[in-house]
Image 1 (tube, rainbow, N blue to C red):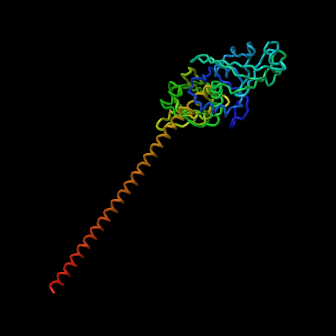
Image 2 (cartoon, rainbow, N blue to C red; image 1 turned 180 degrees about the vertical axis):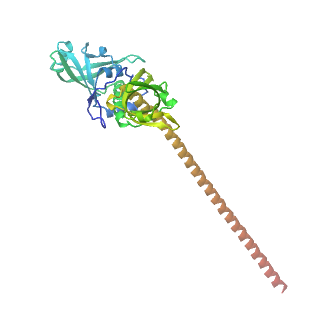
Image 3 (cartoon, rainbow, N blue to C red; image 1 turned 60 degrees about the horizontal axis):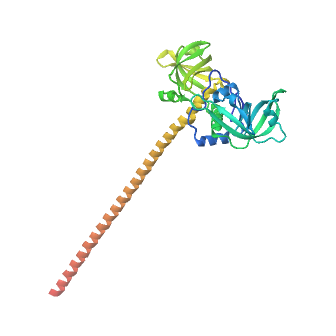
Amino acid sequence: MAFHGDLPSKTIFSLTIEGKSASIRGMGITTSQQIAKYYEQYSNTEITFTKDIIRATNLDPRQIFIKCNGGQWPCIINSTSFQTAKVVVGTKSGAYSLLSAEETPLINLRFCFNPPDSDVLMFQIPAKVAGIGAYNNSADLAVVTLTFTQRPPDDLIDIIGQLLDANQNAIRRRTERIALTEDNRRKLSIPKEETVVLIQNVPRHCILRELSFGGAKIILLGLSQFLTGKEGVLRIEFSEPAEVVSIPGIIESADAIEGRKDVCALNIVFKEDALPLSYKLHVNSFLTTVKKTQVSASDQLAMQKEQQAKLLEQQKKVAEARAANAAKNAAAQQAAEAQAAANAAARQQALAMQQQQANS
């Protein structure tokens, strides 16, 4: 499902990918400021827990429970936002009897996530029943809408926020490219630059040069005039988590490498509606954390240069002031010396006049 522009204030969507999904947790440290931003920006945006979303978030659907009055009942988590959740229960279950009662007590919805690289994460969110109805016109299943009575834990905001942020930035920052230097590949968890692209189902070895949400630049052997406009599938290997994503696209342009007629640079435009979620998460993590750090370092360097320039300017002004003061003092000393010489000459002249008067 594709989005154009910003996500609306309340959107229900599901994300489908092929193969193994990336782990949301562990892709970077999320600050409290970022969590607050997620909560404010995506407060009413709802996601549906498809199989792919469940894999991506490491949700353990067998450990989702409705808890109330000392008891607990299993349920199916259908969707959630930071304000509400929808769960599915059997109409003959104890949970349905409790939730459909005229006066429903306060309940707790328990979430459970089981990331492969850390401990099991479980938490409960207090909620109240906001509505109940048949699930897909089934007489055996009911969907219950729950409204959270307090802000959910930061862990849920982080997990869901990263999903929503990656999907939104895949649109906003679609053309922002990442040069695949050795350092950038390491930060993207891409172990090697060599990979494979399938052009009309024929595998071709190539070298990755640039990546973005919207496409890639690769180098391969071949004649450029026979490649433009062809469909291709680019395979990219990631090491954390270990997976290979396949991204379909169109070869937008093919340019011959100067001095090598048999080697060309291909610009591939990815198909937006087939972009794997795991790929979005890797690119988004780089753009929002690594690149932000690089920008911050550049800003610090610019600030240092600005401070040095200000210091030099202050030193220049001090030196100019000292020079002006020295010149002023020198001029005053010269004036004083000239005045002293004039006074001495006047005294000498007065003595001479007195001598003449005495002789006469």
